[in-house]
Length: 368
Image (cartoon, rainbow, N blue to C red; front, side):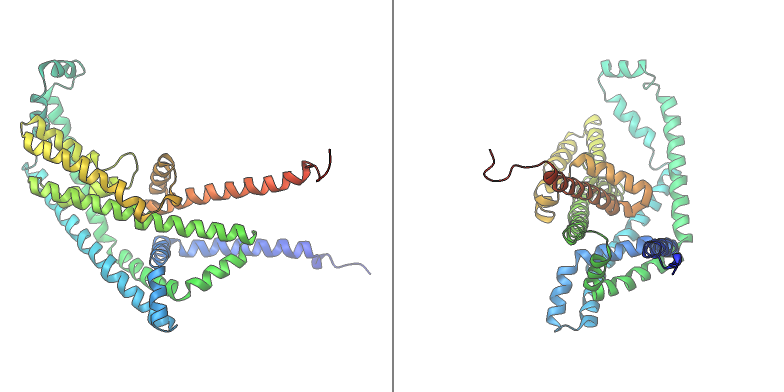
């Protein structure tokens, strides 16, 4: 009897793989508009999972009650403060754009004051490179300031136009987060059973994923927010315009290792030195180097832990690349991808060593 070629087990398995791949691709396509919302729901659920377990234990296993309590805590201590902070930043950015347009804030004048405070020999060197031509520099800075203000205004207007999209994504994130709390352990178990890897490899991969997400969100972002807040306090005390806005920029740069908040407070401190305000310059330098700088050294090991640390150069490249590819979500997605990359190659190297060892013909006991 001739066997039916359509009943070949290998063909059936390949067809199943093709179906799974096609269905996965189509599924990714339809959820792509809410990719960021789903990602942040997963990230927040991982960070607050220990708290959710306490609520689950306190509610005697009532999943819906515990999930609602966890969601409420996230809204109160994370989302509401961040929303208020974002509103303040947008208001200060709009005010600064208005001041730049009216001439109340003139970057060229600040640059001129700093240049005039330089020693004669240094100004001579700058003039050789054309930097000493103040009129030309002023025109370039004014043009640059005008372009920057126009870009900021356009961006703010674009955000206003996309308010509906943001609102929908926000509620999608909250909705998915509720079910991540309620069914997260079941989803993790299903993923562990489905991934075609050894159980120990799958567990290590999922564990590393959760560890890096917690380290990035709980460690890097919290430390960056604290550094930005300390910078805002210093700028407000020193009378720098837009203290909250510059603090936000400081927090953003603090997410990048080897860059940090010094790119914001450093030039301001130099400006104070150049313009003769030595007390402000010295105070800001001490505050930035000692208080803001040491926050990273003290808090990050406590919040992150030593076992999750990756090389700073790898975090920097992964974060920047994540920003380029995924936008704001790349702050977390970039380091996570880098961590999974390292773990997967380490697992491959371990598997190869286990495969090569028996083929090496290790001598049996008693030989020789």
